[in-house]
Length: 175
Image (cartoon, rainbow, N blue to C red; front, side, top):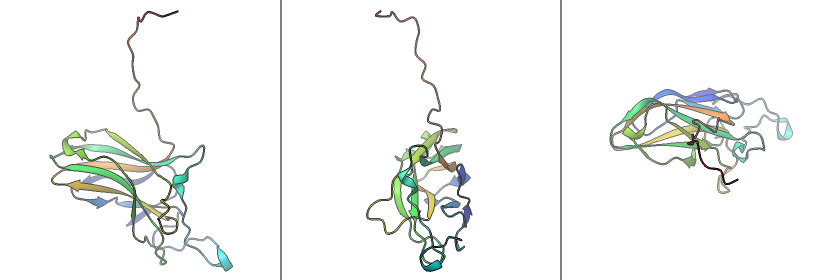
């Protein structure tokens, strides 16, 4: 599995064809060193540590999340849902067991039109989570028969408005 740098706009899936339940083709490593590599971070007693960070807590300025964009319209009467999962370092600088952090509704395949965007904010790490996550991935759950192609980008402060609401004019004012 490939890793991606720790920066806004990092790609987890690039027009990834989804036909069965599957993880994204890339993972996000909060250290930026990549799966299987020792992070150059000095911790207790001068040892390199497998740093984990709760990026879901957010700050007043930076709100992390994953933006899923449908690149090829979906097909089929089955459903597809999008999710964000996190895993701690397993002690060998690789992802341990992934835990589901958040998941979208299940979309019928034919309802996933080209250009549709689904944004999932990264929530704070649950209190029952062991340690802090080092790795994040997107996960796609498919039930029955459905297909779609999706690009998923890990980003900070994504655009919040994709279309502008237009209102009619010529309303009578109360003043």
